[in-house]
Length: 58
Image (cartoon, rainbow, N blue to C red; front, side):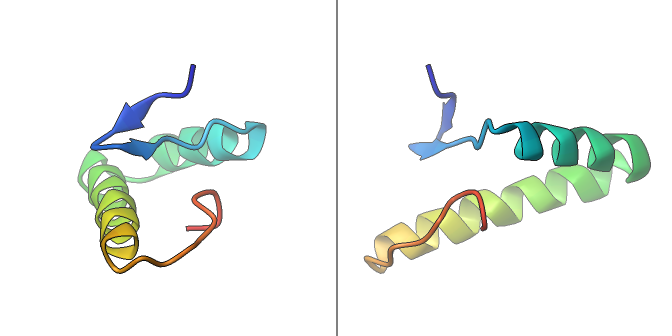
């Protein structure tokens, strides 16, 4: 089952998991959480505008 936050699926591919781990290991928690919020905000804004986009590339 895909994890969802605010109706936005959390990418769960091998690449997404590896990148998430790398960022958690090398960036501050502040930067990691900021980046996560930007992802969800961008996805929600895109959906609101009716845009089609690849969540993994976002």
